[in-house]
Length: 285
Image (cartoon, rainbow, N blue to C red; front, side, top):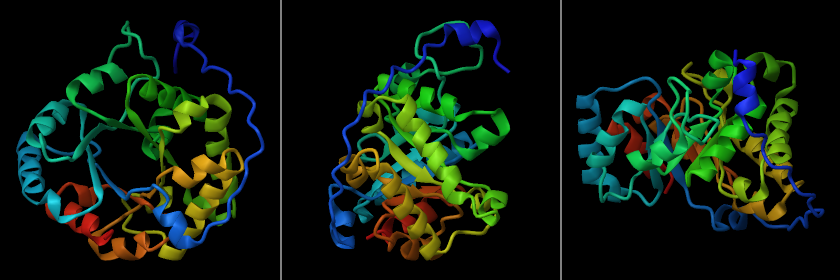
């Protein structure tokens, strides 16, 4: 638990200015799908990998990255960021981290890494608020909002994760939980910061379990999330990339990507091998 000194040193996010009521536009599924939103396939290696694994992955992806039209992103442990950056140089594949400090200035924060350090190491993106960070390390919605702002201040694209547990889903509380997580971002973050965000829906009950939301479930939740965002900012809702994350594999990717509001995936275990990662990316075509 953070000390009072830590809390005193943190800066509260700037107040969010009042927003005008959104003008909700009516579009069909194909228009929503193609309205300036590219497909993004992001790999999250979590606490996996080795120097040899990084080299093998980078070599294979560099040789075959042109086989997909999707944008590719790989998020590796801190210690492998620069090695992966060298391996993926000139491939067009983006590099990301899995976490960052919720303060930007250097200081006495043992074990933390700030956004400027990630940028200097070659990152363009960073995962924020993954369910494992929320559950295992006590990251609250307020901490997630602060990390979003810290990422944007450093010139990074935050991939912000939201999702419900199995208990919450079975209690018919999924939409309430997701609403609270999304609303917190709008309450605590600046509009220009939210405009930089990618939102990843990860049903916690499907992460690393082999279970996955059905394509219909994934699309329904993504449509709900886009609608919730539209209540605050319809233009942002139409342009924001929404990723699905929860046991995405080559054999279920195409069906998941068929949803009009599913703009790609946050891939876990299947991103550790270049062949399965690229197979998922090709399924988005």
